[in-house]
Image (tube, rainbow, N blue to C red; front, side, top):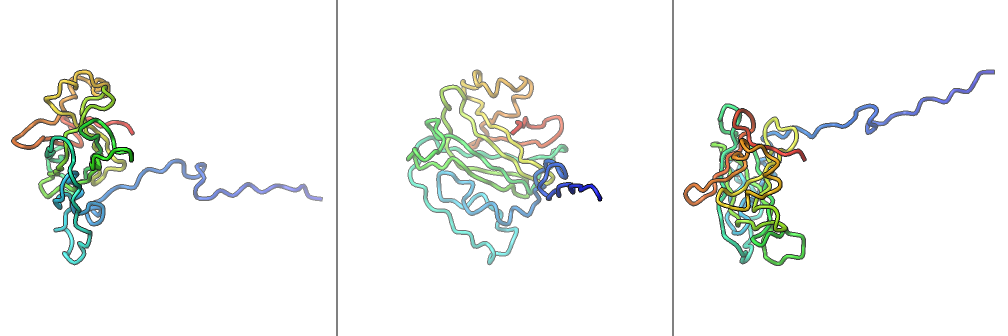
Length: 216
């Protein structure tokens, strides 16, 4: 008589014993085809900025035109900057997302009727430049200085990079608890500066001038 032997349990392709945690997919230039849409970088108006329609035939660019968003309270601003690599060269196939509070410091949660969405997306151009039209946010919970949360997607970026934009002329920066976590000599990489009629915020992916990115 043979002893009965229980077979080892079979492992499927989701079992961490086999594969463990897998990384996010590398994001390539293909996302310009479908992720940005007409007007996705205009949070308060009905312009078509944000997408890169020149990258594919006009007959394929069938996304609906943006609709008017109604009156949005607050100070309209333009945010623009370049996404640069370690050598200071423009990254022409990056995509930037922003998320922010409204002028009163409130995030969109279904209870606000300000007409402000608070979220946008912009492709970089051949010059690496992105641009948003939005409003200047207010202080959040009377603790955090006015800021805009930024996500960066791009060639070779395995996981979305997260950073913040603060405004150089805001006195509340000095007491912001998140900004205080950043070494003093690195904080300038999170500060947008007024250049002409726009707030300039360059994003440097690597190198000596690398923008501070946060763990998420």
